[in-house]
Image 1 (cartoon, rainbow, N blue to C red):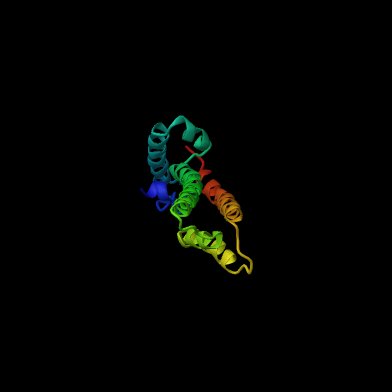
Image 2: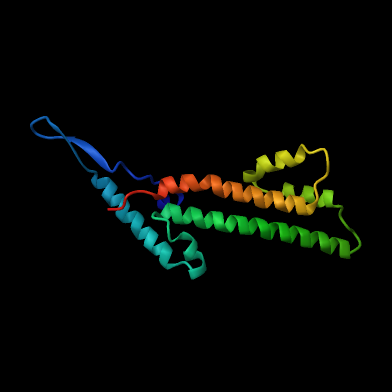
Length: 165
């Protein structure tokens, strides 16, 4: 699991060792070689278990963590859109039952259900003096998701651009 969530970090690629004559030499770190081998095993397993549709989005990733993070990011934005659609459908059902919600109420319910990753967005929405429409909320959530994905890309690149042996 550490290879997937990034908690099992790659050791240094090389280490300095002291030879018998007291001189120092830089050598390949065997722990790094072992880490790469294990990471590549997990990566191969992941890649072999993905559908073609998902695989095309992660082929450029070179570590298990890079692939896993890309998959999480890809599906989190889709699940946010699905959550929004589900909440909107519930609002429509209430309206059909004769108990319509105002957009402002539905916006409040939707933002109350967002997880902690959305706290900055929720804070900015809560400080607005004018009510937000559902379409504006949807646009804000999608923009926020894209921003998170952009911000995560450098972190993923740093963790997935390890030189493979």
